[in-house]
Image 1 (tube, helix red, strand yellow):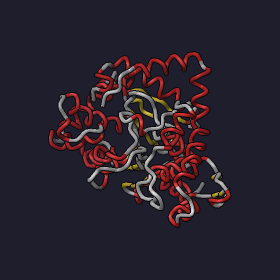
Image 2 (cartoon, rainbow, N blue to C red):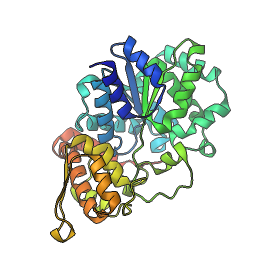
Image 3 (cartoon, rainbow, N blue to C red):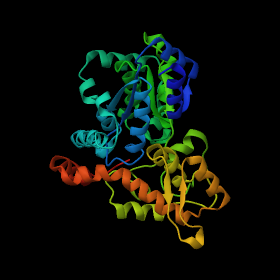
Length: 357
């Protein structure tokens, strides 16, 4: 694959790239650059963390990137996830990996790393200290959005430590590229700013889109902050589709989802079609009565946009189709957790945990 093709694949993943020029140079000079993404393990995985991550990571791998998935259990502990119970957080980490292995991710080419393994290194904590010594409390507090929190919600000293750790992770993992959500942008930019001054490099930031939840947008904010407030969240379970939701549950949630007629922007069902369904299916069939136009077959997202914007496709006809295709993608994961004894026990444990923000 030539450089232009590789760059094109990565640009499909990155809603924002800092910087495209640096990325091109990296691809020209390093055959297999390293990229990473990380998650705090807490609660159940939804389709943004499962299917969409698999789509994005597979594209990065196809572009020749060596990918590392970081199970950030100590970060979840620092952020008081699951009431700060590290053992429960680590159990969720086991569950995360089990989902990724069954949701279409090319796991044979992905290295899974746990923060609980990394923190045993004195060299890692030296990097954390270097980061902390080269920034300010004010700047670190402004990075609070990486934890899903605004400045006023930073209450514990461990939450000040968190961004320093995440910044150090980049250099500890030898990541040339940070491939995380737009909500992680601030700490990635911090790493770019201070990396060279502490003996490292400027990581290239590939920020992927944050998939919306099913609810109606009510936020008055703009930019990245708006995206954070609208994104799918396990703390709002009725507006999230989980990777082991039943077919009935998926239909119920999507049937009540926000989906205004003729509106494309900030329409969650259109987002799922764009970022998930048309990434996994070459075409979709929308079944409807003849009096409403009969069945409709669409071969790409642009065709869907065209008929929906014109009003030739009603939300009540779109919803069952979206539910059906999402269910087809979730079904292999759901069946794995139903039939595999170890996986089933793991899921039952995770479901018993009370999710905290």
